[in-house]
Length: 440
Image (cartoon, rainbow, N blue to C red; front, side, top):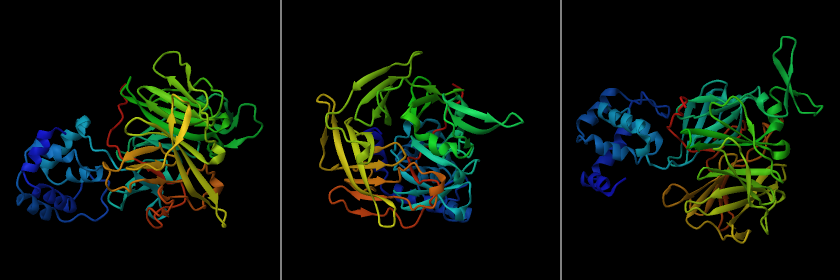
């Protein structure tokens, strides 16, 4: 936001934000998926609006651009003037520059199979969101990036889903993945799967257990849409598909298994278990692999724990090792998290003494490093983590490894007490109100 806009808001007095918060608490919320409390009478909201000073439309837009998404949606339902500002800002999302605080998405048996629970770290409250079929409690959550979930249904087919807008898009069929072989029943329908020459036959809902390792969703500047990158458990192969593609494309294999991916300036960077980094340019007709780093001098192995790659707000590349232990009741818990800065010139990792004024998010979602100054609701020099185990269905009832780890003293605390169900795996998601353009 430009300085003059900030000055104009401030010149109207801090009364505006107090009025806004009061109205948000009273708003009936006909447009809201986020309402937790029952709506109050329309007349009560109208009374507050009538007694409030009228703000110019452009000032309302500037204020709305500073809100977290739940407040932004609530604001749009207060009155006609506020809804106009909401509609304009929603249609011109480049003006909506408020960085969103990650939320924890999980399910609960008590609210229904099609309902996801969203725990807001900013507000420390839970919102219930109804999602389209297939039921969210029947899916595997194998990735989350840029506000989109990547899910595998009970036929092992993949979808991407934005829980805020409710938009859901089917990804290319599983049988377009090289080496996946369908087995047909007498009617010609797919009834089972097998992997290439493997003699094992898998039921439709079992195949996802051993096939998908992780998935990522990245913006695609060339189309204005998104690219989905998939890592398979078998040989840790990399595949990708643009939204709207009819099949998956296998990327040229590297010399070692891939563990993580990030997307920077139009290039896909893939990280191997030995610390190597390969780059892929997905914009051309022919996709080639470039070796950026063949192997880090003192790489950390996945035998030491879960390995993550993450870019800091200032552009540094970090590799993070999350060490776990098995407790006396045979549960996996995060014990320690080590952070290293990748020195690309020396091709080695430099151990860091904490994150200082930053925060990390780790799990099956895209890893994030955020500035604590920009997200004051978060705890500085801490790591927010969720499970990263490739859980199969038979482990549905295991307790999940979720919490906050302080890097200064390795103290661990709960995010909230007993909020989540055990299945599917709770996952971090950053709310996003953008609808994907399917016309490209």
